Length: 76
Picture 1: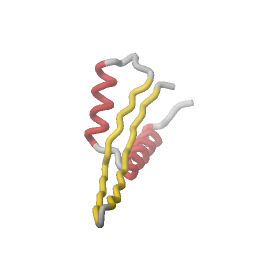
Picture 2 (picture 1 turned 90 degrees about the horizontal axis):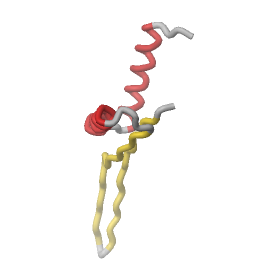
Picture 3 (picture 1 turned 135 degrees about the vertical axis):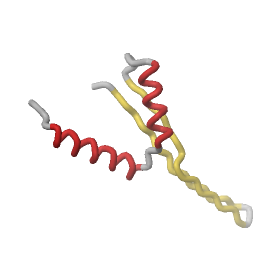
Picture 4 (picture 1 turned 90 degrees about the vertical axis):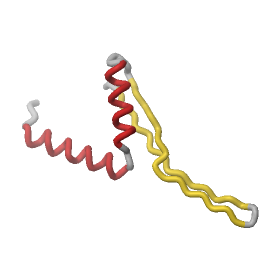
């Protein structure tokens, strides 16, 4: 099966947009790239990052919420 250049570019744009919507940061992406360059034969690379954190204190109670994004790259 041969993939045309236009189809490849469309898939890469869609993949990039989905990463952005999930909240993957440039730092997280660069950590994955650096690890892949250091150890190219590694089967799986994974990093997590907290993108948002909220905390509220009142009358001795604390409400805390965090959003964590985990990016995992595996060889198939």
